[in-house]
Length: 338
Image (cartoon, rainbow, N blue to C red; front, side):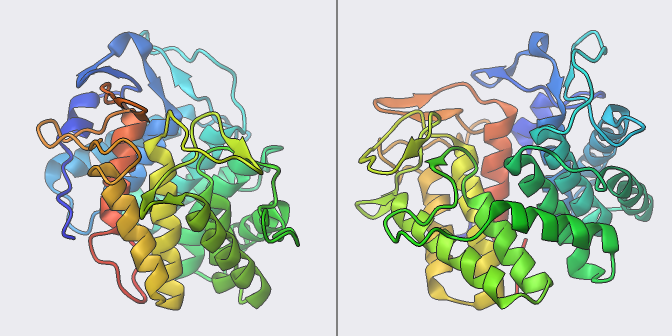
């Protein structure tokens, strides 16, 4: 599969401040403003591009400026900026903090200009000394740390963050029917498994690597039905759930694609290439409702898979999930990670 990656809708959702969070169909809903969660993910996907054009580089600069504006002197981040250009929240270390560090870590290594890489690393170092009380927030932050460690194994701040996040995630439970270290599958579920794989590989810890691969393999089986992905719905589920469930979110497929791409790069095993292919296929209609979520006409992605179709709105999170997944599937191979 040779996925076509379009940034048309990402450009449509963006202005000279940032990235609008929501859309009605493909039309940006400006009244809902911006959130750091999405802007940081926008920075990440542009920095993943091997040869971004001038327009994409300009978007990366806008997104990086947004992240810088959101950063508090103590390292926490604001998340919600209104159309009035005022922050509507207090700085914190929720998921937006974690995703900001993920985006900054990626930009510090893969940014399209030296000054972007330098500025992103400085911002990363200022905020990566903090820790969040929420596991997912630390998980997202650790993925940014993994980006930096892959090129600078001596980076102590990134190393400590990745190690701490892996410890917080914990080991698989001994119950083979539910080895997941949490009692509930919630959202972006493959991200903790990816952190363990990254930590095992980059910190030279075979136990962590084995734990991460074990969890990812179980999760992939748990979310596969009749030969296609049947993703954990937005409300999550626990042990004994039979499914399928709806509203399935593109972020879930994107997290699986990221984790399978990393596992493929580390191990070269065919099962992870197959998992990555399933994640791409989910966007194209190989899913529980048999409808594509990717919109070729707009370059966007619909916001969720419903029992009888799809949510036609094409917000930032969904479109970024589509781009991210297809980036990972562009050149799946041993030793490669997008």
